[in-house]
Length: 266
Image 1: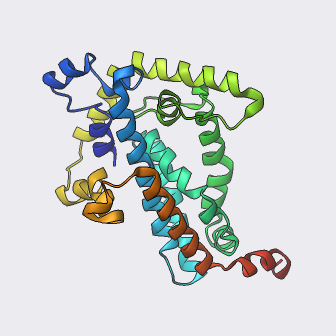
Image 2: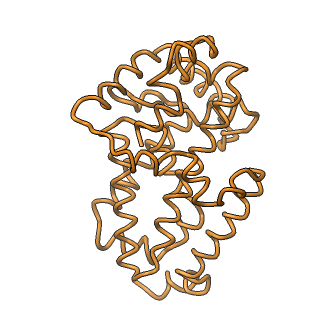
Image 3: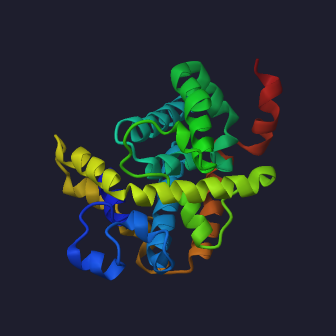
């Protein structure tokens, strides 16, 4: 995931010709510039596809509630590994976004099974990962410790593409300022991010071609929508897939069961 993210974001493997065309040395600088539109679109697409992939992994587990809670547990461990082991906050935020999707969050029986059978993961998610993610979304760089391979780019990308990443209306201006400052810092320290990413990808890591292909954006597009559907309007594609996720979620834990569950269990 780190390798492909770095390629898409143009953090590593950037040729001299690409640098000439971009006018800068790194995608971390390009995303802040007007002519970085296509890169921002590519990053937003990739981020959403990672989120959808994680959601399908969870909602596609049609076994027992305990089995589904185990999948949830493994996804939380993946988020922790992306944050702590490879310092990839781009994919980390995509995985966290999946866990916070309404179709996942409403699975009360599954979350209860997680808290019962994988207590440490449940605590990790609620007490550490969620607060960290909230701070990142608000542009609070103080929560980031140590070197980072891929910084949290989504809030800036959304701002630059005319979308509003700010959910906290009372602190909207402050959060926006923090997001812009975080983006400025990422651009200024792009060489540091590049060096750290390269060290992670060269020291004791051997790429598996089949896995690299599976993590590419183009593969996910074809997997979810087919060759023709992949080139359809993005909003339409997302809306249809969201409906599918709602159906899968409802099949796992029907609405009636979800509403009765809190009173049925102690």
